[in-house]
Length: 297
Image (cartoon, rainbow, N blue to C red; front, side, top):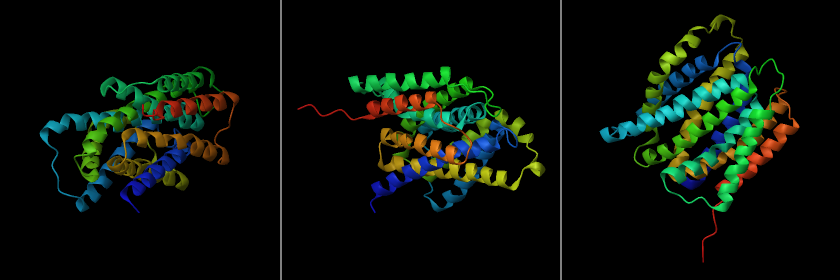
């Protein structure tokens, strides 16, 4: 298979893991691990794994002029993105998170227009509008009375913050991955993220009562650390070596389908009219925003 085919498979693999993660991570929080304590486990575990596999990669040094960009990448992709998503997941529901993360491609289009001066067409403008209408509908009208979702509107808002930071991360990371090997980049990104996240996440990490954590919850924690953190970031950064940032971002389309189906089949969430309508608006918006304009004759 060609490198592009492998890159596409990597992007699909990352999206599948993310889709399942909405329900698996929610099942552990906050009873056994609080959201910020989970982030400590994620960044520490991923940093250790990336340093381990970097032994098999090239011995590269990050150029001094690139360190500010690496720092921004770590803050966007492994600090703001992770903290907002896991706190949002504690407060909201798996289906809401699976739907709202799909606005990432819209964010990429907006940021590309702002910083890369890419033109926003009528289709893209309409797509951005519809996507945000769907997102706002979930925030304002998607609230339900659930013991495991204490503040759905605030949780949904944090999902949007997560999508914005991840969209910005894809754009910044694209320029770095064209220059450095994925192993080199990931080990330093997660090392910086561990340092930045440490004072924020340590208190909740220390609250974990490991002796009371059941075996299935340990399995969920391993899935989140190894799968959702290590493998997804590795898959996505490999995909970025062969695909455009907007193309990798567009694979988030699959997350609602995978996330909703997994949440329904596992009995962890249910569909409502608002969720269905918001999902349709967001997906149509993302499709229009990401659709390539026809070349002018």
